[in-house]
Image (cartoon, rainbow over all chains, first blue to last red; front, side, top):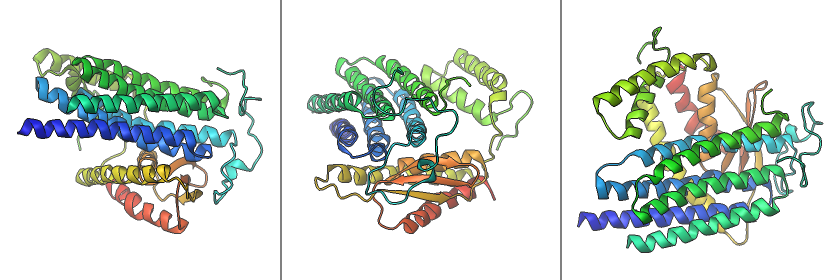
Length: 130
Length: 89
Length: 165
């Protein structure tokens, strides 16, 4: 009885994780500008991967005694994703990517001219950088 | 029941990786591409974990942990490079 | 909290390292305790010059309440963002919002920025150290003042109670 309930929980976690990750990637593909695209991966994909890891944790705990390592990856993902999202937003502001015209408010980072340390042709498209 | 859920989740994650790859190819700017690669490694962590459930092997989590750490460090390093033009100042 | 000493410059970090080591090894044998303990002492001593001053946690139980509330908000945020992404008409009202910070220390500001990124419809984009403001990009916002007020009431005030005051 308990086993079948737990199996249901595992199945739900796996499917929910997959659905969240898919929605996040869908947002990455079809939203209009970079700053809006940042929202999908930074929130939805993280929760999707977290759900999948928790599902795997319950599955292996059920099979062969308590397992905790997946929990470490989950915590690691939840700590690191905001940091990388913040860094990406900073570099996008530094390169002055244009926000969608509907966006209200214009930060001063997009206005003033380039700071000294910019690489010359990096911002748009065909760049020689790796 | 878990088998069916596993197949659905695998299909959804594979579709997610394909969408990320599309964004890597068409991405108009460099930060777009980095964001797509970042999302791709997050999805690949989940794919490896699902693969571990499928093969019933516990050791796949180590690969997932390594991907998580290296992916984070490389994303931050590339962002630093875009911000300053140098990795090491 | 545990006071720092010469051999344990960062007691919380040492404890965390020991716990993570034992969890990674999946065993509580004596050898793992010794090896983990040695690592927990050596690593903080070696990498101490890279660290900023450690913040003091005044009220640990409030930190637990904060984490639970943040977890609940993460789930709610994901449902909201999923709905916005899947909405075929795409009615979004994106905005850049400047959020005035009242927190002073770096570590609480980092936690606040991470929480903002993980919770409803907002990503922290840039921290201006001179003016003490945080630039936030919001996906769908009706009233900007309302958003600033909500972040202040819901996240910043508990963080101030935990770390400062």
